[in-house]
Image 1 (cartoon, rainbow, N blue to C red):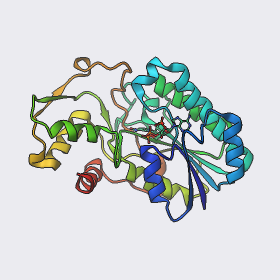
Image 2 (image 1 turned 90 degrees about the horizontal axis):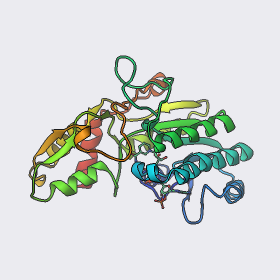
Image 3 (image 1 turned 90 degrees about the vertical axis):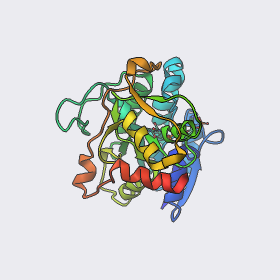
Length: 284
Ligand SMILES: NC(=O)c1ccc[n+]([C@@H]2O[C@H](COP(=O)([O-])OP(=O)(O)OC[C@H]3O[C@@H](n4cnc5c(N)ncnc54)[C@H](OP(=O)(O)O)[C@@H]3O)[C@@H](O)[C@H]2O)c1
């Protein structure tokens, strides 16, 4: 297959390039490929004529989006519209990556995780701009797949895992980590595998949640990183509340995702602890 990856220099994009190396892969990232340049992106996608476009390019710094709202919507909404229009015109299949931050608060029912059909309710500019991007994609490319993932870490980062590893390597005071926000820590390898699976299933369209199985808090996540690093992690970790660690963009209380669509297809992702162990053993 000929595959184009927007945001191909980013953390997930790099993993996808590695995972899909048996295909002809073109990375499309700044400065040469700017998804906000509608004519440029249209003509470049038309010229490359991909079988599939995996759309990862986004403004991903959640707090920066709060203070740069126009830019967040220009990249995450209008950029997604430009990519979707080009895919619709060229006949390329579109797989667009989105986020658990389209949700906020707490899922409405057991097992306390958001399903693909649940109504999004973003509370941040990042989440709202990504949701607007999702809507552009489904409106312009009804056969597109929207892959929502969450709490990503991958080789070179930046990620929560990299931050914890570097903070834990130094002696110092105990680290306070938020214990009242839940989600699914997920390696880029797990998402890339799920996307590779979807690529082989042309009949799949619509929203697909792709994260590791099982949920935890940032505090649980940090404790597991410490456990896996053993003596190389020198500091204590103590739980704190969201109020003790305020951020410009309000994080969802529980953004854990159910993987109903993948499970119906017979596909299962690993538990987050297994994926994290594999990653830490390989990277640190
Ligand atoms: N990281 C997470 O925890 C997480 C969680 C859920 C969903 N996601 C989604 O997963 C996808 C990939 O995320 P990631 O973590 O790999 O993010 P990332 O490392 O920030 O990668 C995004 C890439 O897109 C590029 N980009 C930004 N604006 C662009 C533009 N106008 N035209 C072309 N490329 C542009 C970025 O370049 P610059 O670096 O130069 O800006 C970067 O290389 C995103 O759609 C994100 O919303 C991420």
